[in-house]
Amino acid sequence: MTPSPQPNKWIVAGTVMLPMFMVVLDTSVVNVALDHIRGSLSAGIDEATWSITAYLAANAVVIPMAGWISRLIGRKRYLLFSVAGFTLTSFLCGAAWNIESLIVFRILQGLTGGSMPPLSQAILLESFPPSQYGMAMAIFGLGVSFGPIIGPVLGGWITDVLSWNWVFFINIPIGVLSIVMAVFVVTDPHYVRGTKMKIDYWGLLLLAAGVGCLQLLLDRGQRYDWFGSNLMVALGLIAAFSLSLFILVELRAEKPIVDLGAFRSPSFCLGNLAMFVFMANLFGTLVLLPIYLQTLMGYTALLAGVVLAPGGVANLLTMPVVGRFLHRYNPKNFVLVGIFFTAYSTYLMSRFSLGVDFGTVLWPRIFMGIGMGMLFIPLTTMTIAGIGKEDMGNATALYNLIRNIGGSIGIAIITTMVTRRAQFHQSRLVDSLTPYDPVYLLRAGQGAGMLQQKGLDPHSAQHGALGVIYENTVRQASMLAFADVFYILTLMMVILVPVVIIMKNTGNNEGPAPTGE
Image 1 (cartoon, helix red, strand yellow):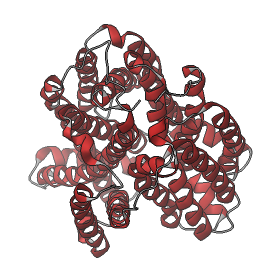
Image 2 (cartoon, helix red, strand yellow):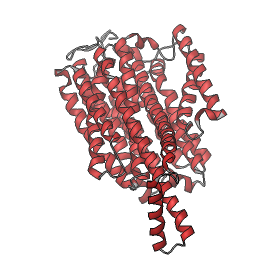
Image 3 (spheres, one colour):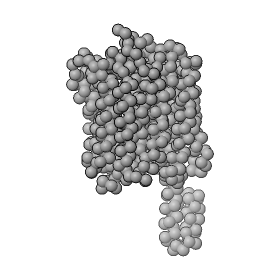
Image 4 (cartoon, helix red, strand yellow):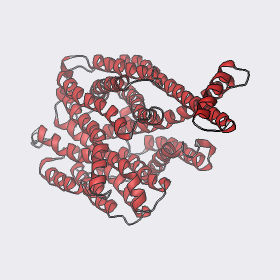
C-alpha cells in the first residue's frame, strides 16, 4: 500500500506539541492557584486538593488506552476529540460553581488530556525518520520540560492579576488553534485509521480500576498514613488484584486494550525500568528541595522557585544539543554522562546543612537539569528503537504510563521516607538531651539567661530555652532526614549504570524498520 504524502515534519511537530504543552502547563498552573480556588469555592484544603488528585487519577487511566483507542476510531479523530474535550472541560472548570462541580470537570479534563502526550510522541516519531529520532525526542522533551518551568510563574501571575478561573480559560484559544492546525496538518497512517474490533470490556474495567486506585493510593497515602488507613488498604488491594488480573486478561485477549507485546523487547523493558527510576529521582527532588528550602532555610515560595528555575533552563538548553548530535555517537554514552551529572547533583544535596548559601543550593539543580537533559532523549530513543511504526502508539502509551507512575511513586516513597527518617533521627538526638549531659545543661542555661535579659521571669525563661532547644533538635533531625533521602537517590542512579550498559545499542543512524507501511 502506497503511503499518503506527509506534511512537513516541522509543521507536524509544532501542531502536536501545542496541545501537549497545554496539558503539561495546566498541571502545574493549577497547583499555584489552589489556595485561591479553595477560598473562592468555600472549600477546605483537603477538598481542594481532590481537584488535583482526581485529574491525575483520570489522566493515569486513559494514558495506556491511547494506542488502542487510536486503532479503534483513528488517531487523528482521537486527537481532535481529545483537544476539543480538553478545551471544553477547561471552560467548564473555569466556570465551576462549587468544589464538587470542579472535581467532576477535572475528572473529565483528565480523561481527555491524558491521551495527548502519547499521541504527540507517536506522531512525532512517525513524522521523523529513524536517524532523527533524537531530534524528535528533543522537541517532545522541550514540551514536557517547559511547562513545569513557566507554569508556576504564569499561574501565579494570572491568579494575581485576573482570577483563578483564567488558569483554565487560557486553554480555550490554545485549544481552538490546536484543533484548526490538526485538521489540516495531521494525517493517519493506514494502520491507525479506525478498525472495527471487539471491545475488551474486562480489560477496560480492570485497567481503569487498577491504575485509578493505584494513583489515588500514591497521591493520598501519606495524608492517610498509608496502610494504617482502611481506605488505603482497600485501594491497595483493588489495585494489586485488578492489575494482576488485567495482565492475564490482556495476554489472552484477541484485541487487547493494551498490547503488552512491546515488553518482549529487552531494551524496551530495561528502558522503562531506567525511566521509572529517573522520574522517581526527578520528581522526588522537585518536591523535596522546595520543602527543604521553605521549612528549614526560611526561603519564600518565590526564592524557592528561583532556585528551581535554572535547573529547568539547563534542561532546555541541553536537550536540543543532545538531539542534534545523538545520531553521531553511541546513545549509551549520553545516558551514562547524564547519570553521572544527576547522581553528582543529589550527592551534593546530601551534603546540605542548615548553613548553606544560595549558590550551594543553586548549582546542584543546574547539574541535575543538565543530567536529565542528557538522559531523556537517548534513553527514549534506545527504548523505542526496536518498535515498529504500527506499534509505536501503543509503545509510547506504555512508556508515558511508566514515566507518570515513576514520578508518582517517587514522590510518595520519598516524602514518606523523609517523615520516617526525621522521626528516627529525632529519637536518636533526644537521647543526649538529658540533665546528665553537660553540653545540654550549658545550652539550656545560656538560653534561659538570654531570655531573662529580654524580660522573662526565671520560670518562663527556663521553659522558653527548652523550647528553643527542642525546635533546633527537630530542625536538625529534618535536615539529617533530607540528607539521607538525597543520598539514597544518588545510590539509585548509580545502580542503574549496569542496566543502561546491557541495553542493546540499536545503532545511531538506523532505527526500527517501518514495518507497518
